[in-house]
Length: 115
Image (tube, rainbow, N blue to C red):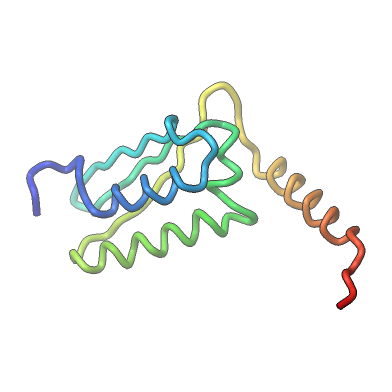
């Protein structure tokens, strides 16, 4: 294992995926720390991008974490990801759920296309 704990395939993976899905990739910050428990990746994104990173019911974040476990298993290390709340306001789970429900209703209200 390299002495420099700030680099790793896990960090590169998270940066690439997150920067690909957010609207403000320049505000993505991934910090990598290593201790006796394994690797911890701390993710910070713009407030507007939190919903995209977390996903509906947390599915996007959960999927990224599962893939990080696969990457870690190749090196026999445990990799976890923590998403930090953006500064300047709280992002509440209820707000994300309400937004998801509105989107779901608008999709349901659209007329079915006949083939």
